[in-house]
Length: 217
Image (cartoon, rainbow, N blue to C red):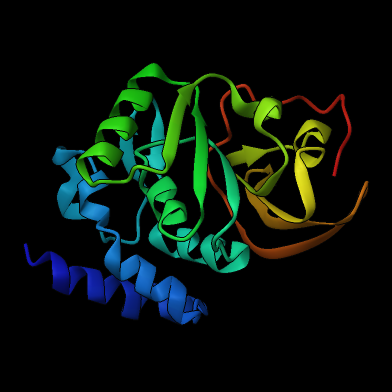
């Protein structure tokens, strides 16, 4: 398989037509090698417009969705990033290519090992992967410039909002099937947030997602 041609086609035929036009994002998707983070059994699907199984019932999201999320978040130095749901480590690698550092929390021990190995093999040294339930964030290292949640949530927990810096951005997939909102929340001032729904989609719900008995945003 010609990975470079497939990568180019992914960017030009899938991602750009979805109105991902930020040249920095497109360059990033060309330079961080997605095939290196896909399980060997599915490597031929690395650039396809599909979710890719990575084990433990989890998937890599479609490339177009990841491109849209990157464009909305605009990671850049000296951003400090928290990711909830590491998966294979590819999105952490994308974030790390622009941000100062990334801390990422994964609930499945098997995926912690997979992501850590993928990141190390590709020379990504500004990502810390930890095993745990990230739904309450990582308050000891807060506040963050960016928080990104890779799975679906019925609502965004207050604990995550409280870990954003003023000016910080949080991205999450909010709602339930058949439609979720890809939502960008910006902390405009202490305790004050603005919300923008970027697009609609459906992604797998985050394991141990909170129930609707708490603060909803």
